[in-house]
Image (cartoon, rainbow, N blue to C red; front, side, top):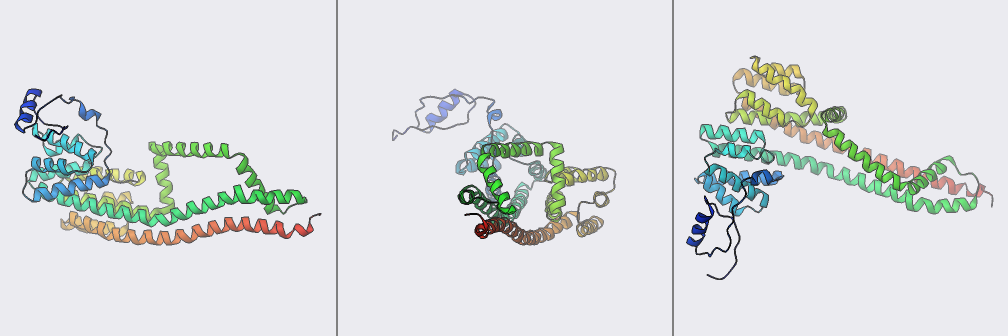
Length: 387
């Protein structure tokens, strides 16, 4: 022994068995305590999508290499860099060794594993192709990540433009304009109307900033909690559709069709797949409209007719779904729809950003131009002021 102190977790039926196992490894147990049985209820993990993708990728590779599920999970637990995922994997491993299925073990961590994920795993277990299902899940998560990153990266420049423009305007109103107001006050006389408006805004901002900041913070908190409620989120989603309806329509079409197609291809029953696909819809207006599709499918109407009645998917998508349903290749056609609209969505976002950028520049230019012109008008009128 090298005399090093070690601390860790070992699985055993009781403390005595744990001590014996430690002695077999050559270690000298100093203190052994049992973990509390309710550890799962104390785990509060908000795993990132990146961790979920890494877990799925690693598990898929290990299963395809011929390793058993419990051995694969044990390896992932050892190599995982995320402490949260490591804890979850250890919980999954414990549950499986207690006789539960993998999908049942995942069911205990709904904050980490979406219902769609769990249902696909359950279908893979039933058909004996869990490794193939995990490959499909990995592709799904990877494509979702790429789409999300494309949207975020497209909005970075407009966000920077808004922030820098806003900061510039605040600096002008709170630091630059007051210096001119002192000069104008000393000269006396009646200032032009634009200058008086600008000076009033500047004085108001400098005088009541201690009220404005809490008011803005309170407004943001109120808006945040309002949009978390069912009614508030529905109204906010409806407003977003009116503003950027084309982007949202294509985005939700991609989500719905990709999820439904992947679930059907994996062997998940239609009604269950429809419910899972509806769960991934982010816009509540569209999700509510899609609720009638499950009812129509239960009544034997299929999905193309109820989807057409809902009227939330683009016409081309509806045509392709109808053809897929008539030819018995609904899953294939749904995936083709998602691929086509994913490309179309990227182009739409590009056009939207290309339009948004000059609009933001124009607005910032008008505001700053108003400030500059107001100052110049006052300066040019100095000669008319009494000396």
